[in-house]
Length: 354
Ligand code: ATP
Image (cartoon, rainbow, N blue to C red):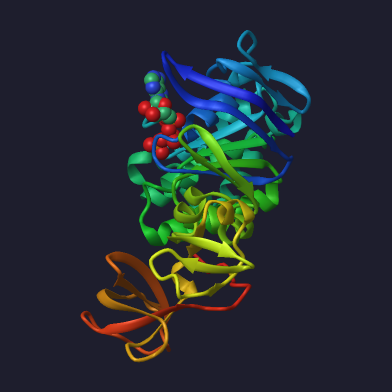
């Protein structure tokens, strides 16, 4: 279990993390999600022990691991790390990369130190690299390099695996494959994974728990379904759910949009904090499009993108642009068409697969 109590990190006068409180359970897969510069890497570096917080404390399994005056260095922690850049050693083979931490990590089991080859073979098999023992990094593809980085990190079986945007250097197809790989490794090793990403699809698809950050603060902590379907702040609604944020008034469980006060929309599961702010976040798939003569707000189609399972539209309604996703079997519209936009009444909407 990892606990952060009021952790603040300053770089000179700049505060990168503001009084962060967080609890991460053993064996949990946690994604730290947020836009560039929100403090994700800073949080990961603090968890790794690369630096001290400016104030606050970090506890690991009940033991103080970092504060303004104390720091257990990374080599004394039972952690593994995987970075976006792979950070492989050019003069070492695939086998050497995996053997090195087995030999030198202070938490490696004694039986594995006695038979490094067997442990290395086991780990390389786990990541599908058993055929490439003798290769150097320059002789590997991007996906294979990332697998080596992963194998190196898990070889000593760390309690905690810290991953900083590990898939962002890979192409889309490889990213999908590696997502599955990382999830499988999580199941097999039971390590706690802390996975930094700015990609909401990645976080939703992989994590047990998502910590959404913005401007050095935590906006929301919850399961993927919670942060997607029950965003607590306008930021989470637009960053994670890609919501259209509509301003208006909540009254008796019905929403009247400011620009269209005669309209009345159902409560599609909006949290109280957003209701208090007079906001109704509508996710792209919660809109319904119909022909211009049907009931609903009139808009003009500005763009149409075919996406296989869905068609993505941008629709101009009263000088605002709304993003609308419609299933492929729904009626199709063209750029310039007049359409009617309404909100689907369904209370529960499934999280789409990313
Ligand atoms: P990205 O997704 O772009 O990697 P991030 O969420 O990981 O961003 P951090 O690297 O944690 O963000 O940086 C948080 C903020 O702290 C940024 O505004 C960054 O410019 C600033 N920062 C990071 N490291 C330092 C440093 N050593 N000195 C001064 N400012 C820093």
